[in-house]
Image (cartoon, rainbow over all chains, first blue to last red; front, side, top):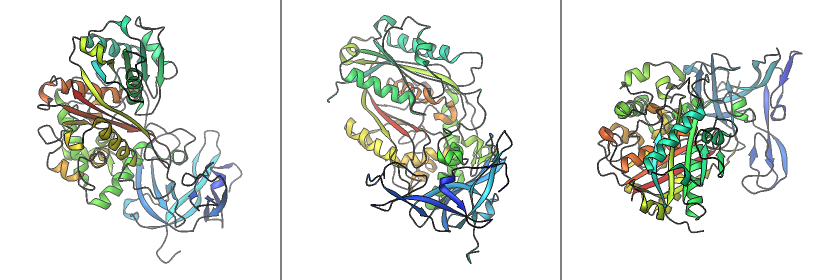
Length: 138
Length: 381
């Protein structure tokens, strides 16, 4: 990670290798419902105790869109989607692939660290990003 | 608490569109004065005001009402995203129904034309901080709906074609020119599969209604409309695998509204529905119970929801044709419903309209379908 960089949502992900990331959810110690990001009380059972839970390296793409001209800090074209993880939590994030032919509902999705945008003060904002994983698990 | 019957005796609005030179407070005041004139009720009889706005800033109601003689009374400013104005109406219904007030003014107002790009979520929102915008969210709903139910992009575009056609004679609508499916699909992509003409436009505008008790309604010169149900729900939080083709908040709010009104979906003669994006209207057909799951595409293909069909949806042109000043939208839906139930909607009149439903939902919060949903059911009195 370059020196002038800030991690967005640092409690929710960590770098595993240089080019891989894993997501960290917060799981209810009573009913095992997973939250990302964390909440004060479990929406399902009301329990207020949670344990950190590393999500599986692969999720499934529930839906996605390629977004054009959103403005603000975002690039002219970017892709984003919701990814369902086996631990029962759905996570929104940007996707590496921005061509519709590379994306399909049900695709296996991996997680990587990436600069999402550069702030006005020149600092790169780094967070997790999704990518379409090869079927053989690479 | 059992509420007494509540009526609307006046409705007014300013045309939605670009009002670059007119302050928001002036737009709101014009709508308020128009509603009171329609009700033939003088300003001195208004006992309280509930004012909805998402982007109007602090004290929007006081800023509007200081241009009239109506300050000094209780004024409540309401922010509930796209449901701001309709939530203000809900509060007015409670105040009158509980017997606290007999004459209450409801105003919805927003001025958005100066803003650029999609409306942002709050910076604290997780999905928003990663690039989720309203068009992107509805685009993802559209993608999933098409995947699950075989709806086509032409089905989505047909919603916009219908609503633009409905608004051709509506002097309050921003866009009054008919468009074709090809034009909708050829407009620039915003969030695939949604193109520009499938997204409602930011607009400036205001609308107002006068809410009164039965005693006042009986003595009123204007034709009263009875509010059979005024329901408000917040979205339920689910961190897991929500079905994004079925907005549970609308489904739950509708069940409550039908119960309160003592009717079923079959009794509704027309509906004003929150078509912020093409896909939204199809999803709401199903969530409101106008058809079964996955069958929204047949309603639009068969013309059932067009004027002349079994259940006309958005005879005003909806958000797609009128434009969307979020605070005003829910009250403008009521304006159209009142017009229709009085038989005064001109070329877009739904014949023999007796029962109208208005549905307003929105507010982006991660893990919720929507932040808020309001449904009102009105009947000719």
